[in-house]
Length: 380
Ligand SMILES: Cc1cc2nc3c(=O)[nH]c(=O)nc-3n(C[C@H](O)[C@H](O)[C@H](O)COP(=O)(O)OP(=O)(O)OC[C@H]3O[C@@H](n4cnc5c(N)ncnc54)[C@H](O)[C@@H]3O)c2cc1C
Image 1 (cartoon, rainbow, N blue to C red):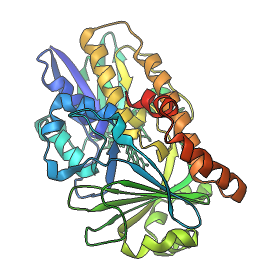
Image 2: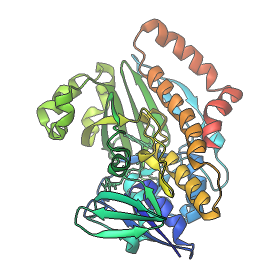
Image 3: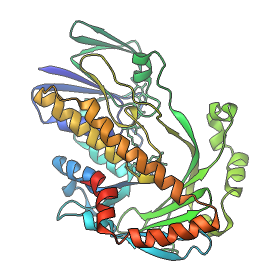
């Protein structure tokens, strides 16, 4: 029996653990630095059909229907007037039991954690990785050690494991954007509760989408914002009321109409990866944000984490020589390019370019060939 160690109990680590769990050839352990897996956070996540198809392999289609939602379309709203100007039917990519899904991140994590709870060791932050012969030796900050045949690194965008292996050569970069997140309770009547609403703004966009059939909504905005090195080092800044007020002042006036309704508002900086790092050690792999993190404007981070985890599981389980790294890089490059394009076009501020963008978008959302190329290549 082969021993598999997974570092980090986020979406990618928990999903790959679920895949290995049903295979008696492997014994798995997940090491998580925190003392519990936080399920309080109610913020949302969007899952496109590529990841829902893979989640269904571990029975996501049986997961409580009152905790997930299947929006039909994305409704685009223009900058100044904030009026609806076109729709994109994401449900065109759905199949019978595989539909574009929105839900609370905590509900997804709870679903992923449920069947593997006993395999998770909390309070285990990795501090050393050694490889001798075929075995990999792990040491944790609490001085415990563990020996394994495979090491799967899934400890997120700031991956300490990747830093240990690369001698600190893999730092993520601040994307010059802040994410502003919150929830809009179902009592609100401000917006369509059955679809995803995407509002363009100048150097700013926001998205509101349903989290469940009850009509609870998720709010997420991305704002261009420069931060100094000092500010970036000071994480308490993002809980500081004066700083939050200063950031909120930058929201374009026309986009402010929902702000009174938002609960649990939080601001945090968005970090992305610039370069791919191939781990040139036997049987050590990274997945999820530890592999590569892109701007959130294509809502693909979790879906790609799930796809990558599934590809790695297949590679290890079938013991093939196929290059997990190269295949992943190909797909991630496509997603990263689209995420950057999206952010660029969502944030236009020049009236002429906005006018042209809106004309093109109205045509493109109806152009099947374009949609197949831009979305289908990622979603299928
Ligand atoms: C604003 C924003 C909105 C987003 N919206 C979407 C969306 O709608 N749809 C979508 O698909 N994606 C979205 N994403 C991206 C998505 O959230 C991430 O890509 C995804 O959560 C990555 O999962 P992960 O498991 O790789 O990492 P994480 O979820 O970061 O999990 C890493 C885990 O490792 C643990 N860990 C860290 N260090 C150590 C250590 N030293 N030792 C042990 N454990 C450790 C952490 O505590 C954590 O539990 C969004 C991202 C942002 C920033």
